[in-house]
Image (cartoon, rainbow, N blue to C red; front, top):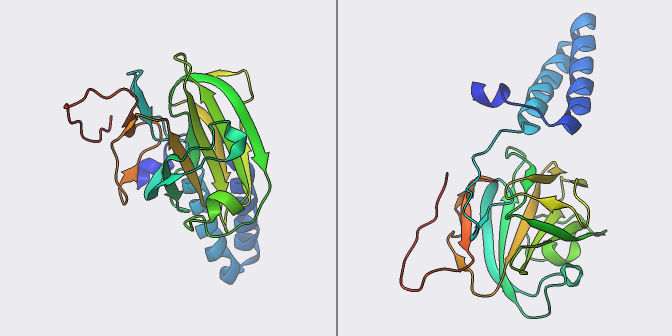
Length: 230
């Protein structure tokens, strides 16, 4: 637990930490114990929430890595959002649910050029719900790999998360595992696998963003390969 408080903090999080810390300090000065302790907890939690740990990113080109920390909440065949430009045929969608205790940095699942960043306003349903992929506020990102294939990733707001932040823009080149955004304060990230990719994770498995290998793009037939973490 101590190690989680000694790692870098997301720049965007410092203002929240500062606000909670300032109220905590004022409560201490005025002797308001009923306010001090809840605000102290909120200050410590905000430091924990906005942590930005370094990650050891797998460098093999034919892999797709987890775009977020969290739990694989569902795996389904679904038509991707039209703004991704991935066509109308169903693709394997892997949904990662991020609780308020997970790292909320989103990372590129592979190296490529940003082809699409499309924001769509929407509802704030529970991010774990099936309908959240269609109805909730979201940011869709499509990366064009060097081999021409498009990889789709979608940031989805939840009933607690009310702010999606995306750092990248169309035309930008990103590396595998590079930070491309974050969501406050509880949310979901969907990854759409291209046809032929072999899924390496299961429902209920915990992901480490930028490290856990989720799929192989060009699997060798007859060669089993388990999920990998680096």
